[in-house]
Amino acid sequence: MQRFLIALCCLLCSLPAAAWNGAGHRLVAVIAWQQLSAPTRAFVSAALADHPDHSRWVERAGGHGAAAIFAEAATWADSIRNDPRYYDAGRGEPTPPIGGRFDSRRQRHWHYVDLDATGRPVKGELDRQVERLSRLLGTADAPDEITYALPWLAHLVADLHQPLHVGRSDDDGGTRFTVENPFSKRLPFLSLHAYWDELPGPSSLRGRRLQREAARLLSEHRPPAQGDVDLWREESRHLHASAYPHQAGSLLPIVDEAFQRQARATAERRLSEAGYRLGRLLEARLRHRVSRETP
Ligand SMILES: [Zn+2]
Image (cartoon, rainbow, N blue to C red; front, side, top):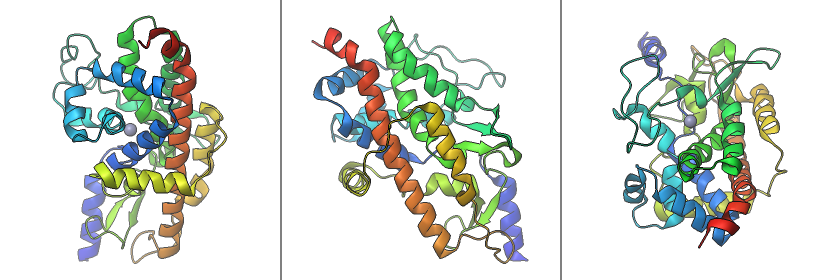
């Protein structure tokens, strides 16, 4: 009975879809950084330095350099979810532009795309926004557009590689699919979506440990084919077949040892693929600007 009540409580309190946790987004960003040429790194750093929230990223990066600042910028799209300077369109009062310049909408629907049984998008704009923001890097006239697009893109390319961010619309990307996870004392019952978000490891992962973990992922995974947004979305969708646990626990589907091992391996592969691809995307889209605009 007690287990049932805990499970029920988890169901009722289950959080809305977030994303890979902080560790996941920082790992993708650090791997991407490794793919960038020195002039592109300098260009990206300069563009980020112009962002109104840059000082927060510097502080959180704790003196670990430009890659660490880029990694913190990649978590910004999630950090604004509870930041009162930002607002949800259609709910609550609009807040003033950030730094007097930037859109203060949280854009929660950019973080995911849910598909129906035929693979048709029915909710969310993740794939479309990755496409749009990538294009913007090449075409934008105003430097502010690049500064605004970079943290979003660093975040959303990672989200697009999280299998449940390209979710099934019938369970809202796994947010309404509760599982029992005996491997977590902190969250023994949680949504499948949250289970996947947490797979990259402790969300406080930063500094030397972050660098070591990124280096390990790079050494264990070869660069993937670059592909495009459609391929990345379809890859995530095809992972649904193995992303759901089928073993019955005492009450709910349960994460057993084999599932945990396989899910973790998939998550690590997807993080490395996202990192390689984000790096190559930035390098390709910014190339002409870097040669023209970098001092
Ligand atoms: Zn996200």
